Length: 185
Image (cartoon, rainbow, N blue to C red):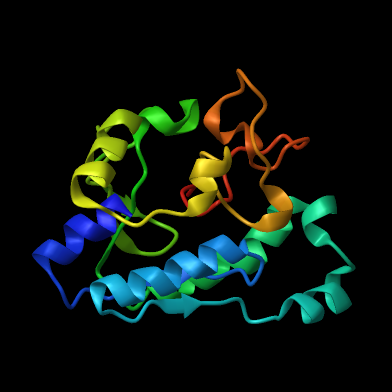
């Protein structure tokens, strides 16, 4: 949300979209509505080709519980990469302090999979920097952050981290998985 707030100050007509897996938390959908109202924009939903029911029919029920990599690929990675091919660049809010897998995130790189420039203007920001900006600028955020969710994805693959666990440990708990695949390759 910080990135969106900053970017819209520079370019108010920025194309804004969300990877809508159709499995997001109700609080996430409510945030999208608040964002549209607050900034006077329309957030485009980039959705997978198959509905959740169609995915269940072709891949079995609850793919996320059996093969979260396949589910993320079908519901997030492929739709986003296809959508990005219509752009020259995309902005991402990745930060180096979010996890060990993100510690070397460059501020600008070539996204080979999507064939676009990937810009991470917040790469060097800390979590404290983000929350200070949110507070100083009254930036809307997902209310789940105030309910113990530091990292929020799909409803079936996100839980609150236990005390002492890393912020992203609540994602894909029980699996040897730390990223959905969007930021790989």
